[in-house]
Amino acid sequence: MNRLWSRVGVRVTSVGLLVAGAAGGIYLTQDREVQQRSAEASVVAQVAVDDMQLLKQRQAEHAAARAWQREAEGDAAAKAASAAKASAAKAHQLERKVIAKKKADAAAAAAKAAAAKAAAAKKKASDEESGSTPAFTGDIPASCDEFSGNRAIGCSLMIKAGFKISQFSCLEKLWKKESGWNHKATNRSSGAYGIPQALPGSKMASSGGDWKTNPATQIDWGLGYIEGRYDTPCGAWGHSQDVGWY
Image 1 (cartoon, one colour):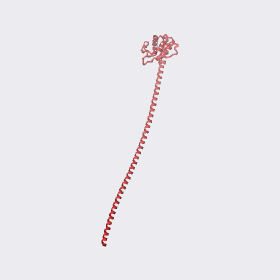
Image 2 (cartoon, rainbow, N blue to C red):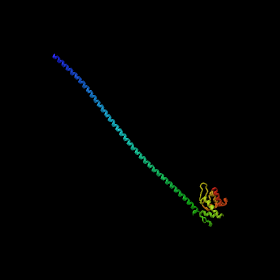
Image 3 (tube, rainbow, N blue to C red):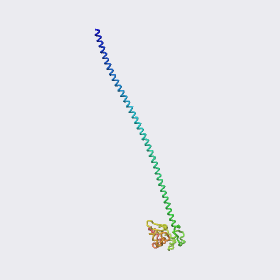
Image 4 (tube, rainbow, N blue to C red):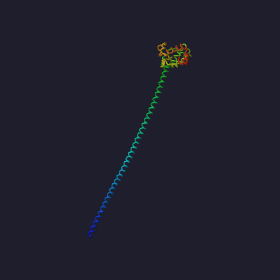
């Protein structure tokens, strides 16, 4: 009987140990699964942290790159603006030089033209009144002494042609208007020539072959023309005042 209970007890004990072992195995298995899951969760969490740090690092790198790009673009814009400003200043300076040169050239041209005009006027006066006029060998009345050059010749020849000295005031005004008493005066538009402005000038050849250069020949022909057409120098001058020519 005791042996029976002993056996039963052993068996019960064995069964209890088996049950406890099974339970412990189950618990160990569950604990391992929990630990594995916890480890996996830790790995996942660490990966997430690493990804977040990598993302932040990349964002920082992108921000730095954009900042550098903006700074580079700002420097390039500043350099471009500085270059444009320098170019504009250079162009303005060159423009001022060109304008100044144009003004200087215009002033020089005006001065040259004025000098040429003055020289021409001086030469014209010299041709009329100076020794460039061929010498006149005729007598000059005392009343004509106040004149010189071609005017003195004209006064003398007018007196010789039979006109009164009072007529010379009209003759002087007439031929001053026509030619300035220049025996080389030429009207380029009409071709009239000489002191009386004969048209054509070759008409004066009837008074002498030297009609191109001799004021006395020209004056002689002019006085004959006036007498035949207007009677007196004052008659010719009056006609010229009325219509603009004689």
